[in-house]
Each structure stands twice: as C-alpha cells, then as structure tokens.
Amino acid sequence: MWEPATAGPEMSQRYPLRTDWLVVGKTGLDGAPKRWPTPGFSPLKSAKFPQLTPDRDLAEDVRAQLGRNVLDPAHLTATQLSRLSRLMDHYFGTPLQPRVELPDWPRWVLVTQARPDPQKGVFANLAGLAARLQGWSASQRRQRQEQWEQARQTWHDLQLDGATLARGSVLYRRWCLTCHGLTGAGDGRQAVAQAATPRDYRQGIFKFITAAPPPDLPRVGRGPMGKPLRSDLIRILRRGIDGSMMPAFPHLRDDEIADLVSYVIHLSIRGETEFATMAKAMQPTEEDPDFEGAELDALFVQNLVDVLYNWGVAARYPIPIPPHHIRTEDDRLLSAIRGYKLYNSAEFGCASCHVKYGSEPQLKWDLWGGVVQPRNLLLGVYRGGRQGQDLYARIYGGIYPSGMTAFRNTLATGPSYPDRPDKIWNVVHFLQALADPYDRQRLQDPQLLERFKKRLRQQGDFFLDDLARVTIEP
Image (cartoon, rainbow, N blue to C red; front, top):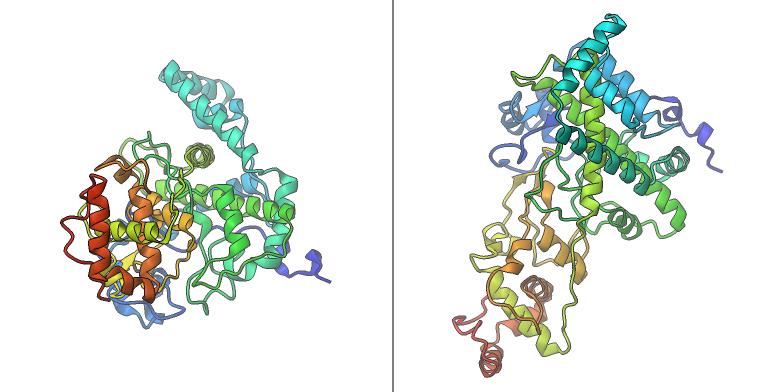
C-alpha cells in the first residue's frame, strides 16, 4: 500500500527556487537549431555546462544569446534570492502543504503601492504611500481593482483551495512526479530517457489547448497566450498524448482528475510568478527601481495577480468549433480537395513550414528553448489529438509555444460558404485524407477533380476551376 508519509524525501522538502536558465525572448531564441540535440542533453543544460556536453555547437548558439534572450538566475543577488525564496514559500506553500495565497485587496494595495520598509518609521512609510497614491489616477485604481477582482474569481474557478491542492499533491506524487519533477519543470528521474521531454509547466504555457484569446487584447503581465482551459488538462490526463510517453489515466476517478488538474495549475502559476519576477529583476529598465526588499515584494505580488488574471482571460475565449456538415463520402473528398488548395495557398501557407508535408525536417526553437519541428502530416500522428475537432483547434488557435501560426482570421476572409464546411474544416479534412494512402490516391484522380469542378459550377461556385490537378509528392 502506497503511503504518502513514506513516499520519499520529497514530502518534507520545500519547493526549490529554479536555477536553470530562463528563455525570455518574445519568440524564444534567435535563429534555428543546427540539428537535434543528443538525448539527455537539452540545449539549455548544454549551454549551462558546456564542458560536459557533446553538443558544443548548440551550447554556443544558446550562450551567444545569454543576457538577451536567455537569463541566468545566478545573476540575482543572494539577498534577492533569499527574499524571493521566502515569498515563494509564503504564497505557494510546500509540496506537502501547497497553496496559492491571493492577497486581499487592501493587502495588495499595501504591498504594491505602500511598499513598507521595516527600516523606516511608520510616518515615513505613510508619507511614501500618500505620494504614490497621489500619482495613481481614479481610472488606474479602478482598472487594477477590476483586475484583482477577476483574479480572485479565477482563483475560485480554478479550484485552488488548500484542501483540493493537498489531495492533488498526493496524486501528483503517485502518478506524475517521476517525469514532471517536484516543481513541474519536466525534470523528473524518468524524463531523460524519454523521446519527448515532459511538459515544463513553469512558464504558464501549454501546447494543446482550446483557448484562443485575441492577440490585440490589452496586455497585462506576460499575457494570456498559451493558457489552457481546465477541460484541456482533463482531456490530456484522460487520453494521454499520442507520439509521446505521456500516458492516459482512464483509471482515475473524475474527482481525482479534477484535484490533479488543480495541482498542475498550482505548479504552473507558481512557476510563472517565479519566472516573471526573476526575469524582470534581472532586466530592469531605467525607470525601474533596483528590485530589492519591498520593491521585490511589490513586483512578486503584482506578478501573482497578473498570472491569475491571465488564466481568467484565456478561459473567456474558448475556440468555437462548428459542425463540419459532412453528409456523404463525396462531401468529405470534396472538402479535402478544397483543403488541398487552401493548404497550398498564400492565405494559409502551410507548405512554407511543413515542407513536403512535414517529411523534410525544418528545426525550430520553442519558447522553452527546446528543439521542435513542424509535424510530419503524412504520418497522421498528432500529439494534440487526431480527431477532427482536435485538428480544428490546432489550426484555429495555432500552437503558441512552438510558433505555429493561428489561422482564426482566415474565417473572415475570402468567399463564404454557409451551407458547406468553413475553410478550416476543409484543411482538416485534407489532413485526415493525407495520412491515408488510399485517400491520397483518390484525391489525385483527375476524373474525381473534374467531376467535382462540374458539380460546383452548377452551383455557381468556381473555387476549384484554377486547380489543374491534385499532386501529393512526399
């Protein structure tokens, strides 16, 4: 019988501060990796320990961006690290007693605006608060209070109470710790030997999600991009991730899945707050103070509220997935041929990244500093799921951490077909047919294309008229 009290030394540990390097570039690292890294040697670790890696070339590429796109927490002072450690313990607890401590509104104002300094007297602190509040307009105060209230509601919606997190912590240790690690860094004991690195939760971004906030929203903190819905995390735990070592957990009860999801979100919020605080403290602008003492407290608490707020923003924008309206086999093949033309069009431009349908690797950096490549579409293996709605969500919302483009705006361009699948469904049906050798052969039949052209002309639709043939050459 598994007993938490004897599960290992982790149960009595505090969460450690992160010491690995941070990728802070808005699009990750510059350039493109020369090759795949050696298994067990991530590019960031190779760069941190260049004398121990066989991948000296990749290490040099990363080290060249140190201080710009990559930051080393070792550059924080001992005083900053000590204070940050105490803040992390206070607001997020320990593995045995996890929490997300959201300060109430008066406390938030006190920490972020008053910034009390224990070395100063009460009246000096009050004078400083008065000066700061005078520069805080009514609209700014109202906006920040609304954001705090939304963060508080998100705290409830994400089920981050202590009892839920304590139950989730036990489940995480039982099923997730060996791969995802104590802090959710993807550095567990079994992570090195796996083909795909376990997800690192600590930047608050995920790949296979069904939330797509508009990119033109006013940016608060690091923004809501890449934040999943709770249902996304539930789906991954239930189904696993194809093409990776992430297993499915069909044996867990619904309440256990819910508790585990809350704990993963706890690790993500904790990690992103830490990430954002470290990054800002290491890259202050001329207008920023030196982030020491009360200034570091203010930065930390501001980031915590911003992170919660952004999870709430993402939850308000689930991807709308319409029905595909496919009634017959001919409808499916016609939609796939439409998708073939769109796939190769300037509007979608899929072929520019998925060269030869992804069979020719085009290596890229992701936002974690890992190496990825556009999916080989001929294989039909999709880590985010291969069902139609899964592919629709990937095309509509993109894959933010990997740099895959979101095509949500294509729905508002070009001709409208209210009685037929929209353009994204056309591409989805093409991708599904592309992975089936029999379907690929049928799509390239000139007689089938001519029959569909004739059918569409009779309906006043000339979309396929300039398509001479369908050619799929891997």
